[in-house]
Image (cartoon, rainbow, N blue to C red):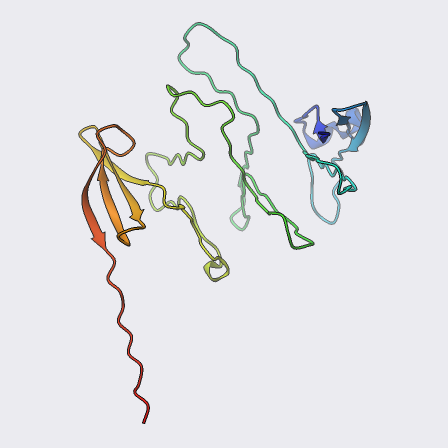
Length: 228
């Protein structure tokens, strides 16, 4: 099986004044044919504004797809490794970080944005995919962590824009949703397909898990006007 991977090998964080030093900031990218060969393709990055959009780094690799080839195209790749055997007060390994300094009242600040332009039906379109290729049972692992400030109020963890366009804003696929905990017990809600009810579960995710209540779903009775 052949994979074609476009990988950005180097990431640069530089101020706009560094353009004279880096020129147009050409960045070495790499397209690798893992089955046979390897060659370098230059991926152009520029600090020059285009259409009033200032871009720190722009990567636009393209592959003309052959239907007989399995491929994976990665616009930007970051692989960060931390090796250590002693303990330390605080250590973070961050693959990609987006920080925005909003110093204008009428600006829209977005730390990380993903846009998918789907030209043809078929396949899938996903803005964020999270997987765990090598999870550890002893490591608390979360796909998304929402960290609010201790002094802030009124924050929105997840906001849905144009909800009418979504078939499902969130689809749990029948999995458990933790809603809180007390005295070391975690309480969850889960859809019970057989009973068509919502189970209220204590100690969910542990061997002591048990259903301690149910939220009944009452069908709405509909009546049709009798014909005459």
